[in-house]
Image (cartoon, rainbow, N blue to C red; front, side):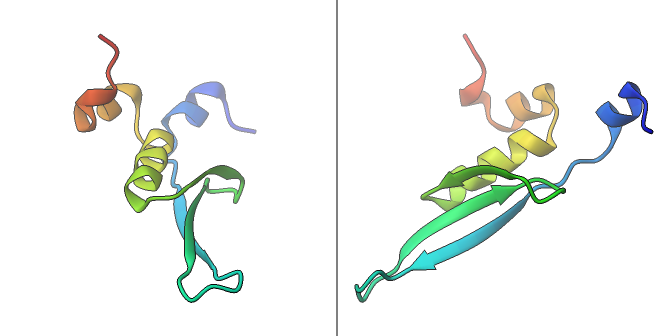
Length: 75
């Protein structure tokens, strides 16, 4: 069993999978699904950029997140 501190400092990884569905059309509807290291679903987005932001939210600490995305920092 992991201690609380070990859980906080362990490296977290998120994966992004691309899902395409045609539904009778010639162009695909593309969705990006973000999953954590255990395979649990985090978020479904329409753009790859937004999926990368959600994956980074899962992987990075709060300070690293604000450093990489300053527009998300509360004023």
